[in-house]
Length: 150
Image (cartoon, rainbow, N blue to C red; front, side, top):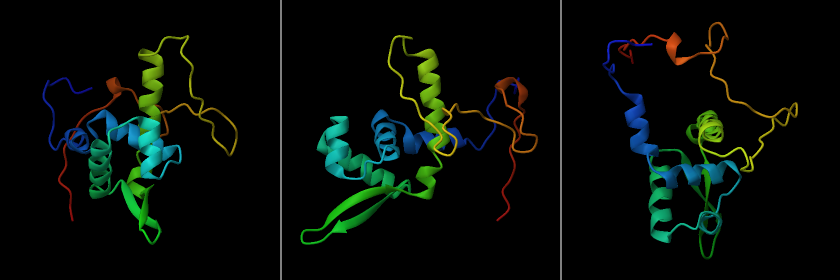
């Protein structure tokens, strides 16, 4: 782990929190992963105010995590679908869920079990090195900022 006490730039975590950094945004994304697409279902499931929901959905569309798709005309009705960028958040959502179950919830609290439909096994998020496929721990990484070449 970086022992210098300083954070290397650029800070992608900071940028991601600018997009994802409130509870309603994560809860809307969670619902979208459960298959919710329609405004009224988001509102009912979350108990969220209409103004807050409208603002968060608009921001998720603006940042490319959801797309607004018309599914009915006269009058026009829209639903919200996860984009590729939104779907790419699934491992992060699973990891946050696992962390919360381990550190925040009482062992008596019910758990939501998520199974891999291909094999039936319960999912347990694991971060591995893409090169060697070994699990990665915070104490085993080094930080190095690089310039991106266009």
